[in-house]
Length: 142
Image 1: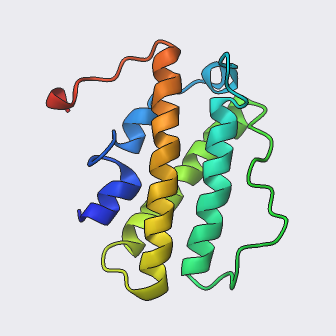
Image 2: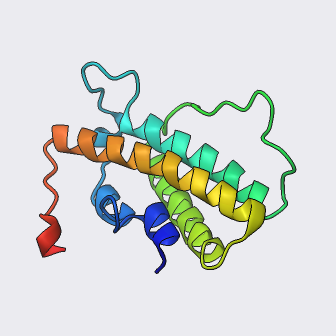
């Protein structure tokens, strides 16, 4: 795995995404956190929307960022929706990993932007989960 892939999927500067999302329940994803304007579910939905557009730009499905795109859509409203969202995120992360194996040009630029954007939000997700009582193993044990 190269540094770009690790930056997209975790394992370099932050925990691997599967560890961050392990055992996430709908109750946790829906729980409000004092002082935050969004839930984990809303944060995950934001990641889903922005990642999908970024991947579509890289693969030529889109020519430009859609105007008036709602990048903070409603969070999942059920356990079923949450699991579908998590499955979709995992599929998009796999696609990003493939695209980041040896990128060039515009694809590399979009991947770098996506990596920075997502790392910021994965950090938020980790912090919220810790506030909810989730304990992550020390890095030396991973």
